[in-house]
Image (cartoon, rainbow, N blue to C red; front, side, top):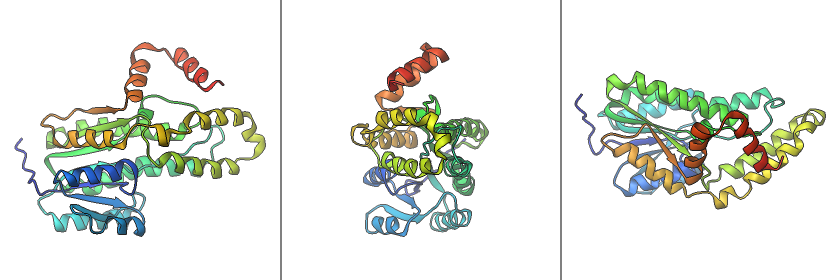
Length: 284
């Protein structure tokens, strides 16, 4: 199937206010690829103003009307279609699954899973043979740790959605890749801690008591990840490769921890061995 994507065709990136999304937009623009930076807040929209090659776009992945308006804007400005869509927007909700408030679980899935599909469906008419659909998952989509079950569930779903779309879109010439980062130094760690603190206060003390020691161990384990995690530039490089390679990989593991843990979990460790390793690491 003939690919016909002009060099002037843009890439749409969701969750572009900070972290991986922000870094990816800057990187792509520096390489001469026009970018639409999707953000939720006006202050983030204004932050992008005047940056060459980056066009801010109000794009809340939970707002169907705003998504539709964003897709219409891009279609009007680029009737030839888009080079790629990078579904990067996401949040991390941390709480024990046995007692997590259901509305918090639903929010986690709405942003990371349903939101991804909303955006994909809206921009699909703008994708042509050779266009790239890139979904930012996580090593959390392949391995699971206690205390963040809602987040893991959402990323496992992103893996499944991506695998299915890769098969469904093959005949259309649209290529699908998954980015699977490990611990990356981004603000999601701090925002997740802030969210978790408020969320855990909503759980009745008598229900939370059996999990307090575990959640304290989890919090200690992830502390410092924002400072000590790998650079988000590693993810930007993987996204660029997925956008430009003639034969992009279906998956890009990013970071040494992601590569090692997913390898061990898939090939070397049984469920019981994995459980023991995780709990020993948490000293729980």
